[in-house]
Image (cartoon, rainbow, N blue to C red):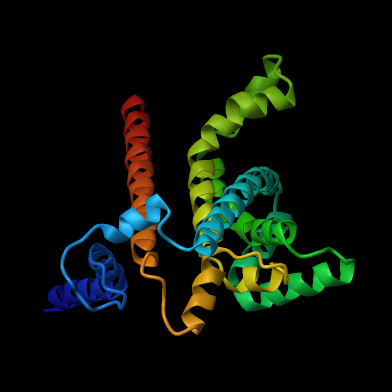
Length: 267
């Protein structure tokens, strides 16, 4: 009975998590303006999305979202990887303190982060727009990259870096040819996580995008919902984003599993 209850609870939790996504995916294949009203199978919404049959504001919001997410994820991956290496090389209490400080932005509510960054940019006189949104996204994505890279550093043999230096490599060469290949899987995972978080973010973006009309997908959906409804083409767009992220995670997990199996076979 305990096993049956545990399995039932797990399946119930999974259904609650994924049922809304499945419903959106199903109703993305109908032309109904209102979600829940099935008017027959159709791919018209997908055709509108790819053939330019949607309003220009949505296209601009998608472009802004992708540009900001790519730039923020790239910068976060670079900064987070370097930060993880630095924290890993600390010892004792200093490492524990830095790990705790790295966890604070992840535990801090998004609305507090957004207000804090808004006040910071306003006090420095920085005009809000692309730059402030990217900086804000880098600020809250970097700790997640550190969290992804750190386990790889802990699994790495600590002697191989010193061995590379003893064999004549410069510190930069040793990092590029020894450390980065070891943590590459963590960097890729961190990049995907940062990219996903950037696309998903609303609270931080709404406080740092300024008043010049810079819209991302999240702020566009918020404004669209306040008008009394959602653009039907958002359903296929949401389905595509979810499918792409899911496929990337599956590919990375399979690749990581195979690499781990090769290492175990060598041992």
